[in-house]
Length: 88
Image (cartoon, rainbow, N blue to C red; front, side, top):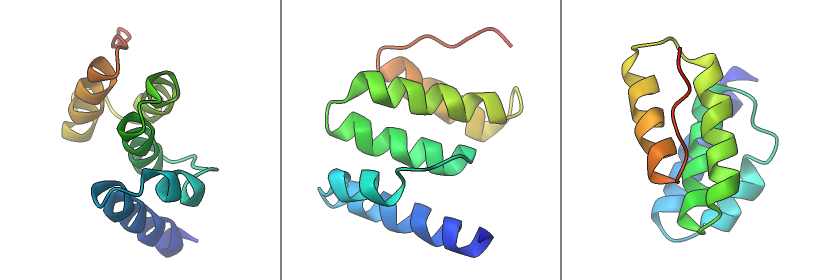
C-alpha cells in the first residue's frame, strides 16, 4: 500500500503540472497522509478551489513536524490559498 501511495502522489503531481488537476483530484480523493494531502491541495488550488485546498493543506500540516522543511512548504501553500498558519 505504501508504494502505491507514493506512485499515486507522483502521478497526481504530474497530472497537476500538465494541466490535468481534475484527474489528480480523482486519483487522490481519499488521501490521508501528508504528502498526498499536499498534492491534493496543489490540484485543488490549480483549479481555483481555494477553500478545498486550504482544508487539504491544513490536514497535511497536522501530520508534519513543526519546523520541518516539508511543513514550511505546506505553510506557504496554505497562505497562498488564502489561509493562515495555525500556531504550533
